[in-house]
Image 1 (cartoon, rainbow, N blue to C red):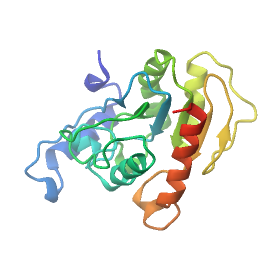
Image 2 (spheres, rainbow, N blue to C red; image 1 turned 90 degrees about the vertical axis):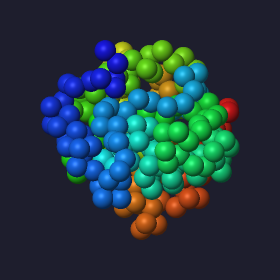
Image 3 (cartoon, rainbow, N blue to C red; image 1 turned 45 degrees about the vertical axis):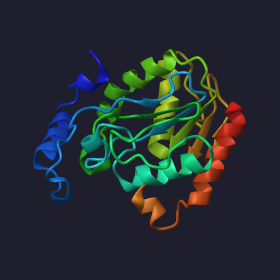
Image 4 (cartoon, rainbow, N blue to C red; image 1 turned 120 degrees about the vertical axis):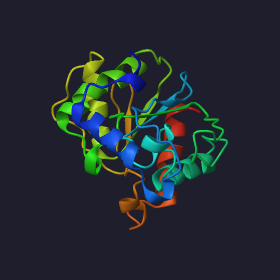
Length: 218
């Protein structure tokens, strides 16, 4: 079974399919993806970007991670400015993608109600990402987009056979935890709640991505 055919979380399956069936008025003529979202990018990447979950009318609509909403716009514009993407636009599944040693994924692959996955849904979904990372030998840093992703990354370490940490490293914007098998680098999530209020500015995200490039030597 591939991630795009997964139906292990009944609440998420029901929600993603309900959203896809009802659609938002602005996208009423579009066919929604309505399934789990695959990762995107270079499987030999040195930088992994780990997000929370697909947006109901963003990636759940387009079928591509961080695609079709303002969070994706904010992120891909930053990736372009910092030399990690050849393109600043990622609004449709047909838009070209050329990432520079970057792999983009999410802790939970289905759009959750109110953008809040349950702990059991997180734990059920993490093996998909753990399996991917287990086969990515070149990763040098995981950039965690928000506290949920930071927590998920710590759990991914354990899933890959590394011991749990006590105390656990604390999330923060710009926080760096030098761990095995890869360091974690934190940034506030590029959600509208953060970007519209100025909690996360373009320069703040650029600085984190440039730090990731430095760590990964990209």
